[in-house]
Length: 453
Image: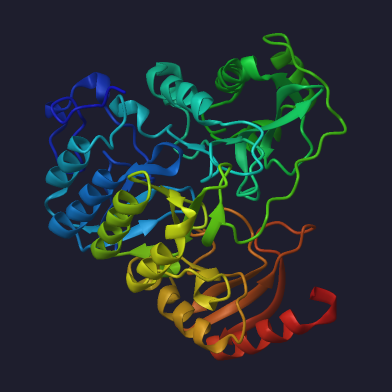
């Protein structure tokens, strides 16, 4: 794949506009990208979008080197299966050059923002998959980057391609989702808008029309949406879903599938060793505590991928990483080696199930040091629970409502919410202004309640 080269790219914030070719100008956005360094309290942030969450071992080394040489060494795995480097100072241009040289850039500068396509971390190797999504994903990513019209999409506009895998994030809402299933010996793609694959599908297309469906949905969205309607949900608040689908059906054949339902994904398959489609091979998953890696962790995982896997790593929407194609006989050793790198390899470890944003230590909007408080909470919980700590209402660390959310109201103090499908946002407010110790007590009591068993 052709890569946008440093000599062509847009310069990061701070470079003169007259040094930037007009055809590659980056539009204003609050979202960081590889070519757009966004400032935070702890320095600049560079977001590296990974195709299908996958990165080669050599590229992982390049990320580690860049974080160490040009930033604070803080590397984050994101909930969209990407990587971020934090704490970037005055050497942002050198950092970008090094990442572009490693092949981590977009095909064109304007295409960086729209590379928002999420796959299962086990795409192509999952035991339960009914479709290897990687070929179609490659087509979609190429089109998103090379089609100038699609560069008008919001940097948050996102597409999900689900192959029916057992390991799948099915709770993150997407502007467009596609999910593979089999019927009468044929593979079809169910699809929906402004939601998740667990929602009711609005229809399905034949597999050979999957790429055309994505193109048609995006073109129709851009034709109908006003500039302020940046997401599919905004458009559908004004334009009835039935009208959108009717107009879509005029562009390509859509099948009605009222009885289709996506099978639930299995829990905790992103951590530990699990058999692949080829039973002689496994993938091995580990969680960096609260999504934060250092260069040594990333280099160590990359070397294990070279020695025992296929030389690649895959990042996940659970802010974790996988080593695919490891021999079953090597899995236990790889797990022990990941533990020695201070990665978490057991779903029973409380810290492996907690989510926390950057918090007040790195974000000016954070009202509490969420990462510090999450580590304290992990020591107080007698069992692993899915809890999200958010420093402000923006919920940057979680793209979906967690079973329990602690929303910061001040240093060391949080309001506690429990997920409620009937309520928007974090759910139902359960208690206000809790210390972490008090929150731990309530969370443990809730987990032991027969109503929540």
